Picture (cartoon, rainbow, N blue to C red):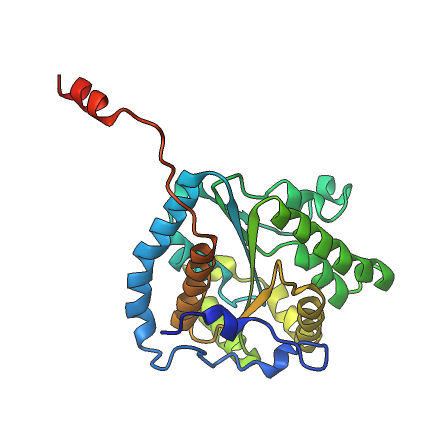
Length: 275
């Protein structure tokens, strides 16, 4: 198992631009034997839980995980199978859907700021502020000059957030056009998953290439040293979960949160308890 899966999955630009289409969504970087993903993930659960507990106990910093990806790319599944291994008392999950009328009255980052994790917590964004340079760009929901300004606003916002001791991990779950079709068919045929299906999802497939381009631009413009983008091939769900867990573990290990050591008169307190 590599020590730095982040180095393998960090978005890398060529000729000044990252191209999502050049990443194979069926690949499994860093995992020579894909069948080991499930076994390794079981071991990672305890490590992830302990690191999160240390972050919570230290109560000085926080972690924000941003999950983006096309429909059916596995954002919900990642939250279930990876984040589900954390202690829920210090996890805050926020799904960002179409802005409400109140949210539309403010700048696009207003609703994002309100959901940033508290000190010691892990925040999860299921979609995020990047929708305002993805779907908005694909469907021409704002003038081009407005969208162009948003990339710089996002970078400044994320730099400010990290300066306030919140580590940002941005992950793009990358699936293929054919894999999305397969998952949509499975969802449509499963009575217990039909509630997640919308005919609009089929309509959006017509914009697949436009979305790939929009993602490529957003990742190129907004992958920074303080908030890099990681692109996780997600056709293989087990690999997806393994890779996201490893990215989080490596990030938390780098943060190296420590249990506090309060000044306690342990012998005296034990004596009281045993009296």
